[in-house]
Length: 466
Image (cartoon, rainbow, N blue to C red; front, side, top):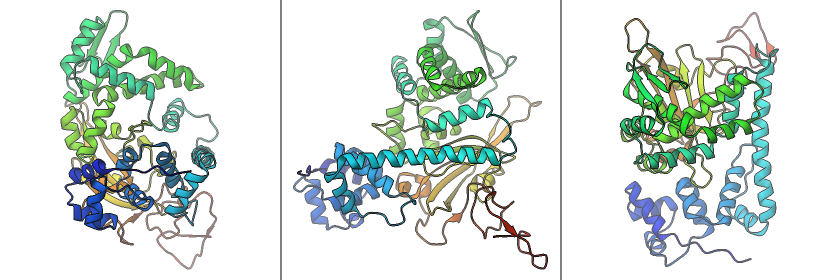
């Protein structure tokens, strides 16, 4: 079987232009001569398998678009599965290329098997942690069931995302403004708008067609509440179809999923997928700049970045979470290998806990989990005003992060030493399941390890892991 020759001159020039790289800079990064790169950029020579491997590692998102063929898509998926710490001795680039070329059906089955293994592991972790938690004697609460549904959907809901993107186009712009949403609610859906602080953040009377919005919210929050209600009405069929297929066990779970999907649709309406993804890449996922471009809040923007998992146009795989002053994780999603603890507190060494106490300041951390994977994390403490002196503002922090291989796409990684042995903070998921025996911040031993106690010796904790 002959190998398809890949000419990628235009894409290579685009990579250099977007990153302000000289030919010599890119040639050095790829380990080739400047003259060879010039030939590649002029389509005088095709990419070799070795260069494909280097490009995919140095510019993973760009490579997805360069190698648009079926073979390249298969090879990229093989490379991702092969990088799993499950395999201590990974295959090299040439072996993977031969595997994808000579045994495509077997390669596809290997990829599917690895994905099934990964999903099964996540489900097993959910069960294990539930059994170890204080709530193990009760069924999952509705909000837990909905949270797990979004997680297993990879936090991307295709029919709703595409419908919201189409609705944004109908509203006359790449990011609908408040006036356009208000006009559509009034003229298109016969909804009257009332701005008063007497009915919570948002209240809708379906029988009378009245929508009440608290004017004391920040402008970004008011716009989001309007978008939520518009999505609930204009995309009701798409939302109902998703809920019907979700197979949730209780009416409360289905109602919570409806709310969650309306919020999802509101984010997709205000930050339409393709334009948002393109702008995010252009500014290297600078959240403040994206928030200004789309008129959204810092938290809304972070959350939207974690949903960019459309099959034909994926964004950087991010994890996202929100943590309150007590350390509770009140929102969570991960498209990375990092998985959040479902019960108990998160690792105290994680930068998000410090960010809660320091509002309006961005903190950055390079962290390494027990499986050896490194992550670049950004965290910021936020204060959401209540609009009234007699109601306390809400204080929390949000965190967004990606695996270190995507650091070049993440502006917050600039200045970090990604490779030095001691540069990364060694974090875990939570003390309940963390295997590290030498952590000075351990709150209690892992649930699956016995402990040894010596009354005559005392370390940071009064026991050793056996």
